[in-house]
Image (cartoon, rainbow, N blue to C red; front, side, top):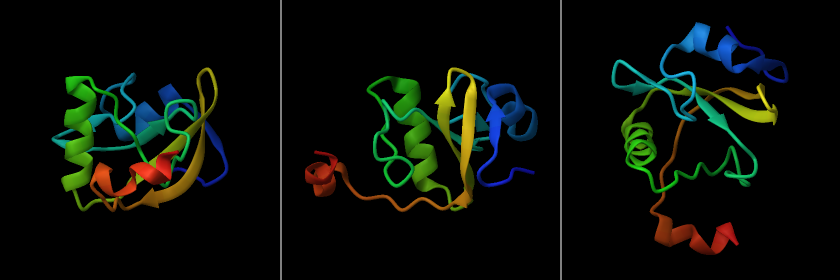
Length: 104
């Protein structure tokens, strides 16, 4: 599947996981199948994953927060390359109010 520390293109990730090629939390079959994070939008990634205000982003974030399956996590290293951060990550959700102070 994927190896921690290697880089993959958006297409590489899509070929293995499916879901949207462009979403940062692609969904397939009602499950988030990966997390492709940009450091400028998710400066505390992968420990904290932030969703913007768009309806699709919020919906994918809610889906990820509810699911128990782990997902592969990638952090963007260049325009179309994502470095594999962790082979699989399980999500622990905190209410935003609780850690707003952590986000600086």
